[in-house]
Image (cartoon, rainbow, N blue to C red; front, side):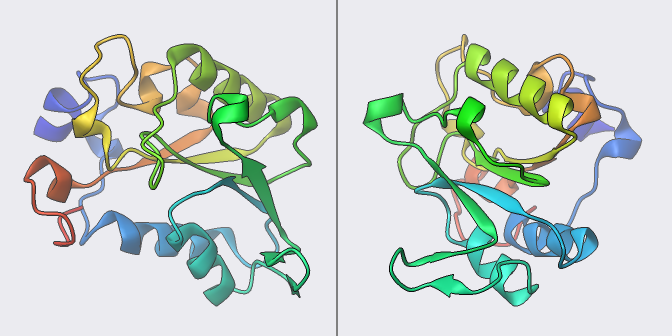
Length: 176
């Protein structure tokens, strides 16, 4: 109840909170639930765990040696040329979209408008957003969302993964 209240301002219900041994483990568990037939999209660059655990779950298909990328993963370019936000209009179909804000490793934080666009896209396409908010405690600008659930419509398309280790300043400890 306190997590729903204190971290999410009661925007989610207490029964929608799952406390675990860490966000990294939860990402792998989610991938197991999604199965091996899904197409995943990841920010590029992004936290390596999304791709690494997809490989372990058999979701990636073969590696394209020329590109150093897996065939069944959609790599969403996120760099200064696009303000670190993917061009969703040109995105091929993906079942699951892994999105980290603030991004690891770039630190780029999605704006409210960008997350609204992401949520609208996911709802329109029937995709699931796995929103990694592990670095949300570092957001200091009150205009930037700390949670995907700050965005209307996210409750129908998103799962948020978070971590207590960043709040505690103890990165790497399994406090999910």
